[in-house]
Structures are given as structure tokens and as C-alpha cells.
Amino acid sequence: MTEHPRPRDGFASPRFAQPATFMRLPHVESPVGLDVALCGIPFDGGCSYRSGARMGPRHVREQSSLIRPWNSALRVHPFDRLRVADCGDVDAVPVSIEATFAAIERTLAPVVEARAVPLCVGGDHTGTRAVLRALAKRHGRLGLVHFDAHPDTWDRYFGLPYYHGST
Image (cartoon, rainbow, N blue to C red; front, side, top):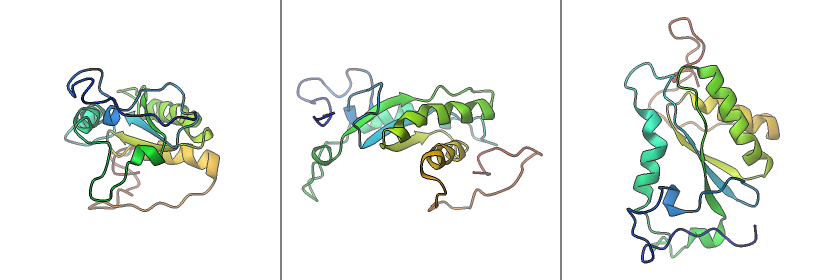
């Protein structure tokens, strides 16, 4: 990919028109040539309470249509520097954490192989484990910087090993 993907022009098509993509960037099937690939993880099957996080990718895309494709304070046009596109959503399995983990790893494999940085939006924290697994398959042992109000490193919950607090 030689040309940088560009957001849809707000003067050519209003922000409420067209299918929602991250920051109105193109939706692409292949991550080849990208620097950053947005991947939605619409899953909250690991949430122990307050479901609804599965709608996160859709709402991030809808709200990001309001973001301008430049940063006036820094005078930076990010899409002049980075090739970024929306690669769609993981086909999550709403009734199976393990099957969703496998789907996340399958979906991210070509992104990681193309050396694009996956920018994953979810969903509950459960998906983080599968994202890290996909990255580790390519890069080996990883470090993680974790920002949260609590560590999400519990071992088991209701006797089960995978849920949003065991990432």
C-alpha cells in the first residue's frame, strides 16, 4: 500500500452518512501495508456483571466520526504519517469464551503477520488475553503496561479460569 488511507471527507459526505468506520477511515479486508489496523472485539461474555461492552466497537466507530483528521494543537495530520484503516470486527461467539479467544487469534494473525499494530476496541477485558496470545505468537515473550483501577489478575471466578477479571 503506497498511498495512505484517508478519512471520508466531511464536505463530500455528511458525518451521519455511510457505514460507520473508525474515524471515517476506509474499511479494508487485508491489513497488508498498514501501520495500524483497528479491530473490533464485540464480546462481553466474560463480564461478571453489567453487560453491554459488546456494543463498544460499534459506539467507538459512531462517535469517532466526529473526530477531525488533524490535531490543531500539535499541528499534526496523523494520517500523513501512519497508514491506518478499519479491519472490521472479530466474529465473536457470544456463548463461548474459548471460541471467541480462537476467533480473536485467527482475526489478528494476519494483522500481526503484516506487521501492523492492532488497535483493538472491545468488549470486556476478557479479549485482552487472546490479543496478547496473538502478539506473542509473532513476537515471543511480551511485557504489558496495565492502566486500570484494579489489576484484573484473579485466577478463577466461580471456578472458571477465564472472565474479565483474569486477563
